[in-house]
Image (cartoon, rainbow, N blue to C red):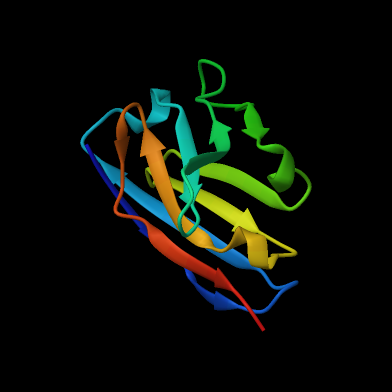
Amino acid sequence: VQLVESGGGLVQPGGSLRLSCATSGFTFSTATMKWFRQAPEKGLEWVASINSGDATGAYPIRTYTTSAKGRFTISRDNAKKMVYLEMNDLKPEDTAVYYCATGTTRGQGTQVTVSS
């Protein structure tokens, strides 16, 4: 299983970023994918999940932590074996290393810094 995140960076409060996660080594289309984050000196926090949907891959169920609802959107592209996290209206408290995960495996993370 390999997960490689990208798309992090420095953004001003109120700005947007789109994180991407390239995957390989497992059956992506049937896997539930998740995003976690870890802020400085804090524990790992679950951010969002997306399941595999119905038998055709349609209608995946998305869930979010409370602070992400209405601002973040998780999505997947089964053909490309990619998962994304669109983040809008970013706040300084969103500053963290963001990880893509499936099962017990997570990637190396991508840094998101929200600061003026």
